[in-house]
Image (cartoon, rainbow over all chains, first blue to last red; front, side, top):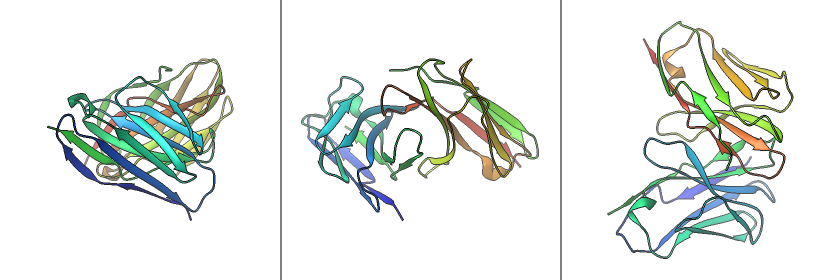
Amino acid sequence: SQTIHQWPATLVQPVGSPLSLECTVEGTSNPNLYWYRQAAGRGLQLLFYSVGIGQISSEVPQNLSASRPQDRQFILSSKKLLLSDSGFYLCAWSGGRAQPQHFGDGTRLSIL
Amino acid sequence: ILNVEQSPQSLHVQEGDSTNFTCSFPSSNFYALHWYRWETAKSPEALFVMTLNGDEKKKGRISATLNTKEGYSYLYIKGSQPEDSATYLCAFNSNTGNQFYFGTGTSLTVIP
């Protein structure tokens, strides 16, 4: 069966520090991979998605970047965090548009 | 970025009541509409995926309908139970890409 792992679960970082959140998927090949953020009191905002190794699409201009170095690995990064980067980050995979998304457990990021 | 709206934003019902929520999405370039349940401290869980106008899906006491021509979907819960308390999210796929566009959700609280 397929599983998705996302870590860390919580993270407290100072403003200006770098960020790396990692997500890996097991039990499937060539998944579509997604990073979402839920800011306080708001819905899920799509940040990045990837349909293959090295293929990254960005939905909104921001301080973050994503990379997919391997088929089942998706990384969310920042060189210098801003206060506005605080939020709950979710990684997800899907087999296609009409296939349901499967989510990781999320990372709660607090910027001080 | 496409606009997906859900209403109401929050809802409190008594145990045993039936309830329904609305998801509005663009009627053009439709590909699929998803419903998810997001319980506190858990990851969103897929409920339904619908692709055809007039689709109706059912899982236990929960059902959903789809109208792609007018751009809306309804989620119904019959005989609400406290364990139904969660945020219900809908997500829209267009036929122009692999993105999932989520609504802001409806927060349901079922009072025992």
